[in-house]
Image 1 (tube, rainbow, N blue to C red):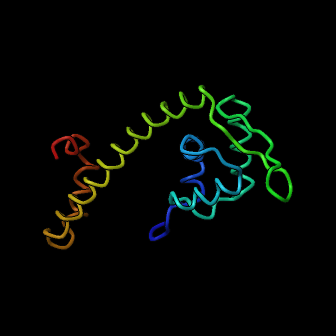
Image 2 (tube, helix red, strand yellow; image 1 turned 90 degrees about the vertical axis):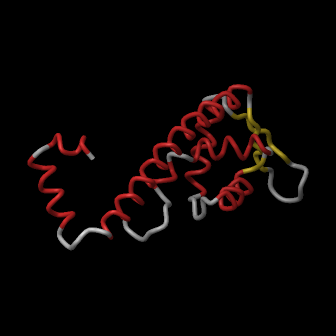
Length: 142
């Protein structure tokens, strides 16, 4: 939706690399990781979803968890990265780098198109879009 911050489904699919990175930096327990996600720029993530992703990463053997009982209060799982998890994080890093390039290209094209549209008389963009629809090859001549 225009004007809305990214959240929810846009970031949900990126929780695995975010969590792998945070745990690579420093092992932690679930609620601590949720706080660190917010500091990373992923606020308001549902705890249940984070725990489902952590469990999936553990089933995949990218993480291991150990029960901590040192602190007062209930025992908590502390998540640690495995060698497989480090490899997964490297793989995600390569994919995120490519995604960053694609998003950067999209934003650059938007900026150029937006700047060009401000220099055109009213209705020019609509006429251009109609001509592209009539002549699909016109798009390649941009």
